[in-house]
Image: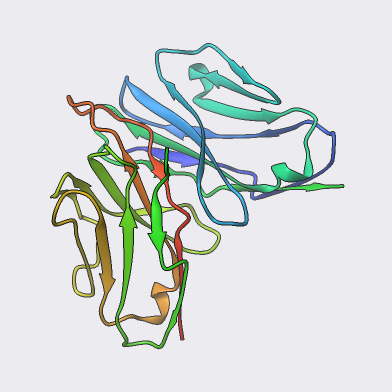
Length: 115
Length: 117
């Protein structure tokens, strides 16, 4: 069965610090897709990234970067030089290609960036 | 491009009352999802539509929840009668359908915050 674990419930950092949010997943499928979403206080889930299981290249987008490691079933998210506007709950999600119909979300990590 | 629209944004009702939520997906998105997000948890899928047909409603409490997408565009989710434990954010999402069971990115609306007293 598919499962997503985000062990960090809450993280607080001071502005300009780097922070890494952990995501560990379980799947029986060989093809699957991983996602990160941001949920600011307004409530809307904002799509950040989609990665398929065959693409292990790390990705950088501005201050955001993602480290995908199949060997450890992890898809970690790093924010460099954090800003107050990064304060939100971040969700990691997984969907299997062959066995999964639906997204499975992790429990989320609440990030607070203090000025 | 307009995003997923939902209304109302907030709703307060008493237990045993009825409530309905509306969602309009991104134009051209054939697949529509309703999620329930309880405070402190990740979203949980309630029902998935492809065009006007139900793909998955296995986690929908059918004794009190119903949903429809009659013309394959916008959708309504109803709770009747509401219970205290239904207090949550109800999120609507949509995605493209590229065929072949493709797992496309879901785009979410702002959600409806429901409080049942």
